Image (tube, rainbow, N blue to C red):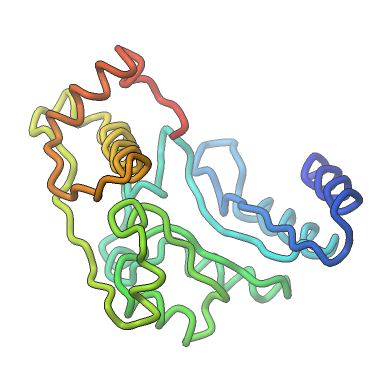
Length: 210
């Protein structure tokens, strides 16, 4: 919390009072002895008091990446947003606008979260890798939810690292966009794995940030 506070104060000093500053913060890291929800709320309260303009809520870590859809309850998947319950609690202790990232897939789910006052802003990650103009389509009513099959090989030993398979697969979608190509939601998982191995070697199976 001290690190965040001092970092924020220095950024504010450099950019002035009118420049918006936001932060992305875990609701919890789901590790024994790790960052708890109560501690997270304490940090949220302090960041709000310092003058943070926007707080984005996520959660998990890269061994238990709930943001990648791992170990998510069926009820949560249907509701789409992974951290809505936490956001509701946060709204009782801070006045800073709250963003939730993780799980949103349909335009209806995004709109309902805003309309119901559960959050102030929707954060979207993976869908943008498949629909780069998602925001424009949502505003014009032309967005259609992209449904992708689970990115799995069918081999248990490999699929234990499912979140890493997904990171590589989505990285390759972003690489296509960077080369002015359209995303390929039907990109074969085996081809994706081979491409990752060629590009990264054995490190593709090591836990890392995207």
